[in-house]
Length: 408
Image (tube, rainbow, N blue to C red; front, side, top):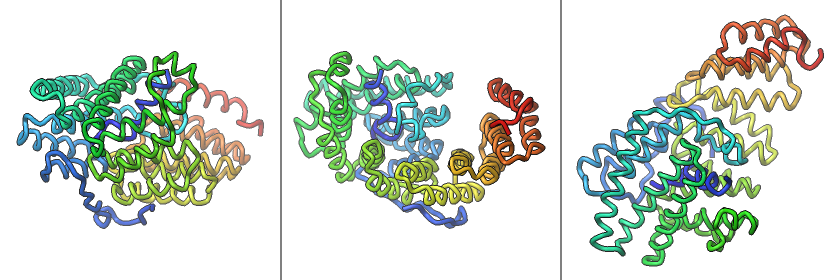
């Protein structure tokens, strides 16, 4: 496992910026076993990866805790547990959605108060990993395993600094340290495929920046290349190690930014087929189809995600987001009643937060106004005013209660 999973890849961009499975019943869709070259090579670690990428962070945490009990001196075990705890918190804060990173929207996300217990655990595990790594490097400065473990720990620190603390320059410093460690690993062992991921990410990002921006960010000593970065990420993927799943995710993200949607869709399709309870992979597939101009196919994926969500296939996420996306797409096609119906699905789906439900009701009201159904629109606006704790949404609803949305 590596820092450059979905959120991990984004944190590096943050520092530098300052097929689809068919419907089935839950018991019928069992995730296939994806074997990686993991350290340590035990069942608990393999199970931890399977649970982690299916977004069952509680189960992943238990698996990695078991592995750490058996291998208390292995910094990889500490990093696995650290990443499970950190990504559980990032998921709670809503910071693992790929759509945030296809643009630079994540930079403008408001800072969310983190869970103090989770962050205390993150700090403790980070210190434990660093102590083990420094101890091993003191004995052998050229220990590639310890160097790579140190790169991962520093990368996870960058993730925490950027995505939780929104401290972009601290994240940049930690990310550069992680890059230096991985680069040194490759100097000692050019075939160490996992280390190619973070070096590839930096090559791609720095190669995308104008010279003046690199100078301002003190990155002029890194000679980036987008093509080299993508090539290194592909090598990390082909290596089949702990970073290979993250390499596939990150490569899909960067290829989408390059508008190579076909290649990105192939990568995301594999991920969703192998981790079918990872709702964000399914959501990313729909987003990529929209980006490729395949609106009809995107609508089909959204509808399938909604159906799967109703069957409980995504117990760790909010399938209502797919209904919101479907509503937005139908809205862009001026299918006002179809969009209103999609927005109404949000409140029927599991794990929809009160704010998401209120936003969907406001959108539904606007669609009814567009369709000329003022009575239904007023009903939606009154529900938002009565039930929403979001003052902004309530204010919008009051505005459209006085006069129809869109001037109808």
